Length: 138
Image (cartoon, rainbow, N blue to C red; front, side):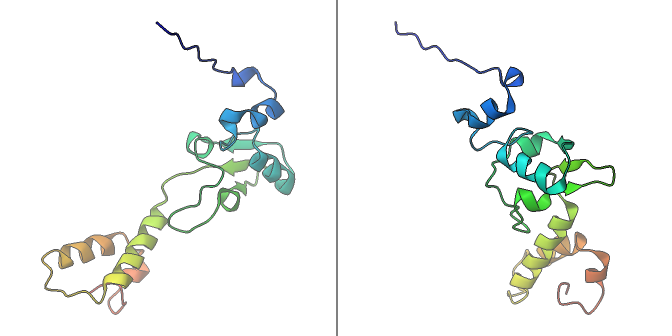
């Protein structure tokens, strides 16, 4: 019976350049990635706080709600640490709801789910967009 041997590199013990050049990490992110090197240079610090979602997300990723790239999301804190964090943002939920309401405002309100959808979307909008008279709520 044929055998297959899989070699799993010990990335934790490798130098950053070795990790960055390894075929398994070409599209991955971490303190060793090309993106991290650019961020460190741009923000003039070596200190980074990278969460798991950031590290596991492709270098080419864009936020589906705001279309920002990872490099546009990273920011430097007052204490000089680059935050590389990907989270589900409640403000994006509001942005999505507003877009759905704008795009569906013309729909026939005889649809049995029309009112439920509109109420659900309106519930996640910022308070200033829920006010009477806005084009987003009916």
